[in-house]
Length: 142
Image (cartoon, one colour):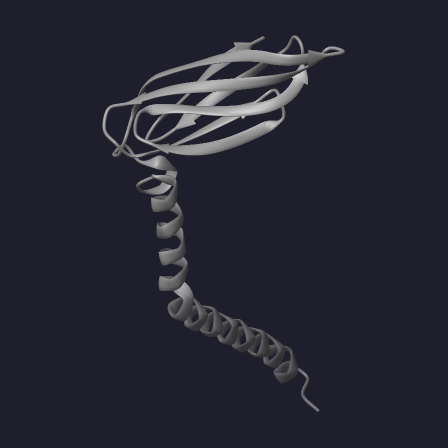
């Protein structure tokens, strides 16, 4: 009985399995590839981004300021209203987020203001960030 042929047979079987897996992956990607691309494009356009990583076109933030007002303080806890003022060079979607008193986010179209209300310590600090084709952050304290 010759054993040399059985050793080579195992290698051929592994190669056939790899070829079969590659064919299945290619078929799946060719069927679903355009759908995945469409989903990513919709997400990017919904966020106001162009291309991967934000791109360089669209609204660019030219100014960002934020202010905090406190009210209804009781036992060291206050109601805080954080207002972000955003300026952009061209109208477009801008995402504004806040951290430091919980976290919140919202969107505006073009230049404008966005306010967040939260409960927090009478004294503290946080950060307000805006994202369009570029991003900017400012620190706020109360």
